[in-house]
Structure formats: structure tokens, C-alpha cells
Image (tube, rainbow, N blue to C red):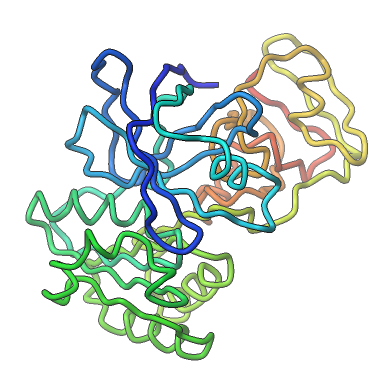
Length: 319
């Protein structure tokens, strides 16, 4: 796990139906580690499953972190427990920020496409881009105005047409709008999407259909886009110790590493937080994460051991 430190909850605010925002501040006025647009932190509270949340406030702010948590009735308990248990004044641990969804450098226009609570990292990006006077636009899909988080903060940008609020769109209308966004491509724009798995799939398919290069198409998912690889039947060799692990059906590589006393940084166990990335020295990974680009997966230089496996009988890891 990354370095962690203690914060307290300064305030809790209602942002939308089922969405609460938590303002976190360092104890005794401690300056918090800097973060970049698209970064996330792990939230560690007693009795609550560890979860990762995107930072939504302006990265220039060094005295606080702000996250938004959607209460998901289908969740494994993390978001529900946070809503029900955490209150202003409570103390908890958070990790140093990590960024698996960074903005590409340059003066090009950034096109941000958000679905539901996926707006959080994109709003962080929007604030940064606006402060740097770099062109941007945000297309924000939500079920209704009552389900659209952060719109109070967005009002000035909505009136300037930098933010398009797209309420109650069905699948057909969503696909049509994303197609329209991509048809405006000028060969330099970068695109960023965060939202439900179905939206990310449409976004990726439409970008590919219009031959927009993978290097300009970015996304982040809060839920796994594939099932974990747990079929087993291959060997994992740990290069630093020479130890060989025989993978059994029903177990992840992370499970096997922990059972064999290997200390591994990990968090989500779903291939979405990026904590358990390991270098691959030999073999072909069976990638099941929601982080790596297609080019990175083809290169096969790293994998996330919580969810990915091996397509070859033997894989050597830098452990």
C-alpha cells in the first residue's frame, strides 16, 4: 500500500441523490501531498472496506482533498458504510494520491465525457485546464438534474456552453451524441471518459470506428470491465527469489503471492486502482484490468496481479 497519513473530515455535503462529498483536511494544518488532475486516493477507515476515490477539487489546492461517494445499493458495502458511518470530525487514513488517468501534456483542446459519478476526475481536470487557459469542454450525462453531482459549481461554465448537461438520455441518444463529439475531431484533440461500463464501451467503439488514435482516447472505469483471470493451470516464477508458484483454479496471482508470504501492495482487487502493478520479464499476460491502454496490453511489459493471469504456461515476474 502507498504511504498513508491521517486526515479529518471537515465537512460532508449533499451533491445529488445518493451522492455525498467529503472534504478532507490534514491534521494540525498539515500540507497535503500534491496531486495532478485525474488522481485518486485510497480511503482507509476502521470497519469499512478500503476503496479508491477520485479527487474532484482544483489541484492547486494544497490544504484539502475533496471526494464524492455515490451510494450504490449493488456495492459490496464500501459506499453504503461510508454514507452511514462517516461524519464531520471523524479521523481516517488516506493514501498518497496516485494517477492512472492523467491529462496529456500540450495546448490541444481536451474533450471530457462524463457519466454519473464519473464526473469527479473530469471536473478536477476541467478546473485545472481552465486555470491554465487551455481549451476544454465537458459533456455530462446524468439521469436527471437531481442525479447530477457538482452542477452548482459548474453553473458559470454551463452558461458559457463549456459544460453540456445531458439529462435523461437513453442508449440511442447517448451513442448519437458521442458520435457527434468524435466527428468534430481535428486530429489534435484528446478525449477523456469516465462513467458506467456501457458508456465506456460505446466511447471506445465509436473512437475506433472513426479511426481516432488510441493515444488520444483515454478512459477510467470505477468498476471492472472484465472478470478476473482465475482459471489457473500455469506457473508464476518470482525472478528475485527463483521461487515457482503453481497457479490453482479459482485463485488470482495476488492470492498466491500473499499465501506464499510475498508482501504486495494492493487495494481494489479488481484491476481499477493500479496498486498491484508488476513488471513482466517473460511470458504473455492475460490482461483483465481496466487501466492499461490497448498498446500497453499488447506490449505486455506489466500486469496487475489482482485480476490478470497468464496466456503462457510460464510467466516470470519482477518479484
